[in-house]
Image (cartoon, rainbow, N blue to C red):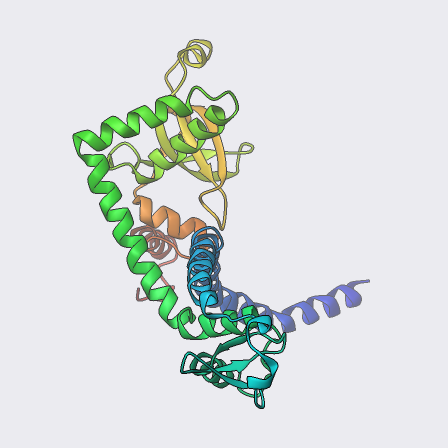
Amino acid sequence: MDSLQSQNEKKAGALDPFRRAIVRGLGVLLPPLLTVVIILWAWNTVANYLLVPAESTARRILLSEHEKYIVGRDQVPANQVSKGRVLIQGVPYRQTGDGNFIPAVHYDEALQYAGLSPLPNSAEGVYRLYVDRKYLPRYIVIPIFLCVFLLTLYLLGKFLAAGVGRFFWTGFERGITRLPLVRNVYSSVKQVTDFMFSEREIEYTRVVAIEYPRKGLWQIAFVTGESLLDVATAANEPVITVFLPCSPMPLTGYTAIVKRSETIDLNITMEQALQFIVSCGVVLPPQQLAQSLARQSAVHPALPSLEL
């Protein structure tokens, strides 16, 4: 029995370097990987709900303008057509797969854009290819969209900061709050956005630690303000409201009411707390790491000190 246990311990000891290398590689890979995941999630949200609709609207407008050049096959006598080509009011036209005609200059450009792929059979399909490749390639659409998006945000912020903008926005919110179902969703979303983008930094940069979900397990929380009077009366001491973010997406989490005496103020900033949460605890605040190493050196003076 003892020999079997010693063999198992030897096998476990042999795997320790491999296990430590895996954990070290995970610690290096996880922060940039999570950063990429969060950036892609934000970009996909903006692209799906703003970029794609704007691109579709621009495509419809451009197609409606170009489809005016389409000439129906019933409008051109058959004896004037030669090898799919015809002159209409002195302008050369070419015939598409559905028998209609479009200007030869547009047809030739669409043929170049298609490359080795066959052209669509309909004149509308040819113009869709023409518009997508000439006017709506992503290397043109995305920079223009970002510029327009940032400019719109800037102008909207300036407009709402003015007296007239605040008047119209107050009227809009007053109308929203009168809708039975929409007002509940809107008020909840507005509270979250006001919390995330409010310019009052002092109230929301207090980071604490609480024991949750049970004693002995600590979790980082953000203080959002004072809590309900009835809860404070029942607890017979001051209470506060905190937001408990989840890893690796700190925008999701829980709202809890805790006793003020059961919280520990942490010597870290809001940004450092977010880095700690997003990295699942891999990225420690520098001052916390320095304090931990100092205590470790005090307990074990023989251990070599680590350079930060």
